[in-house]
Length: 322
Image (cartoon, rainbow, N blue to C red; front, side, top):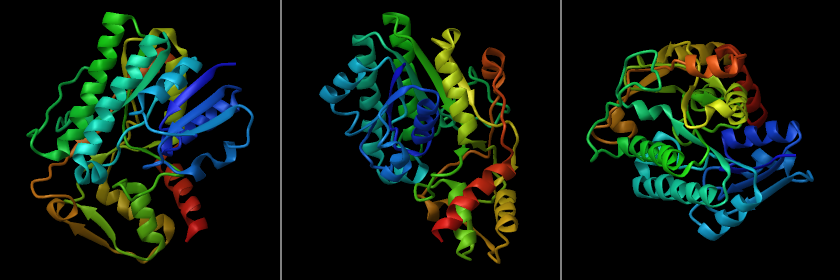
């Protein structure tokens, strides 16, 4: 039985990962301070013998030390997430995402444990080439714009993980997640799919930021989790970085129309300038979708859920709470 520690395990992706690992027979400890994670995400697991929840932060060195020592593997997902949160609380986000990762990496080095570090497609910044490959250039705006703080912090996380691998032989796997969606995701931090679905079900206008012509791709969380587990289990993934996402694109405007149609809502679409949605001078990426060739070649991973499947799963969940 493998004992797995998941930092941020009560969050959207972390809780689905915990489900998958428990289902295959692993023992799972979740560390989460519930700043963005929710207890109800892991509620079905709480009474299981092979599951433990620890309410705490990755900034607590003594706690992380104790939990990493007991684990066999670490999935490091804890982070300040979502554009709205990062823009609203840039200092808190930077400290969590950089210092927290530094603490986790130091502890996995201390106890010789394997770690998967979750990074983000934000790494690529304003690079609109596509499909984006893992060795493509980063193109960022001014460091004085808090919009780019998350990308910068995650780049430092990746660099730390890679250096721990190169200099200290820590078995690290780095993943870059692209627009992962599905049940349990909330729209309050700027996540577009749950926000659109909530607005449509409530008969509110769907708020599209900018022109709506931005191209994105969306991956079901269960497909993302499957990729993560395959990479963690594969010895040849160590020391490398992998995109995890869907290669099918859609504009945000088209996504809004699809949500309205699938919910049979009478909602309209309204367009909100970025400076009103976020902050003056906010910059967004007009196109972002991944190449998953490296992931597929190594593990044989494939997507299983279409965008319609994804939207239907979110709609069904939210209908229960309307």
